[in-house]
Image (cartoon, rainbow, N blue to C red; front, side, top):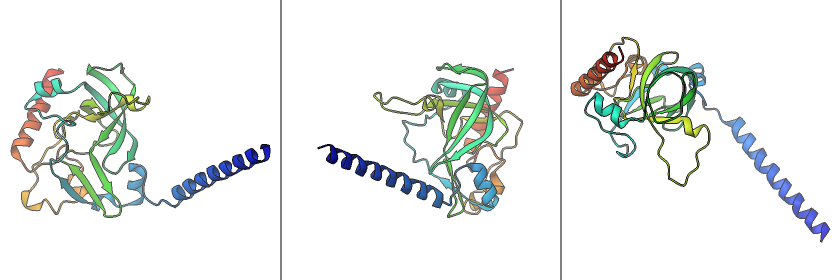
Length: 230
């Protein structure tokens, strides 16, 4: 009986070691970039083709708003943040670590200088050299300050979030939740050129749209934010 038990334990240990070996070899053989910095170091991101996704994201995840008051109401967290260079690449998002500089509205116990994380709904497809933006959302620029309107990531009531997941958020809306704290230039994209933009053409814009109504609303809300926080 003891011999059989030892044999069983030995088999289990060997299986565990094999699993770890496969995992390590898979990780070492992976050539893709894991972070945004790695991607920028390894690839000419400026020449990536911009791909504009449609409004196909579930409506119960991202909110629809008409104005600044709506935006504040529909967002559980409103703050000024600083974007760090700790940014991980996921299949359909960039996971960005930010530092909270000032909080204006919060349903959470988050204080000044705390770190939180934002899932930004954009992605870089290294194999195809694409930058994919969901419905006009634009990636925040590293080392800049932003006003952000966020909500927690949806989950089932029975799911127990990790410590990091408890401070991980998504923009409350796809188009109107992120505003650079500096005076930055906005620009209407050319409808006839939507298939021809490169990342270098749009990387300094705060929103990606060829709809003047969307751009005007974005600019109006930013003006409202600045006036409100004076």
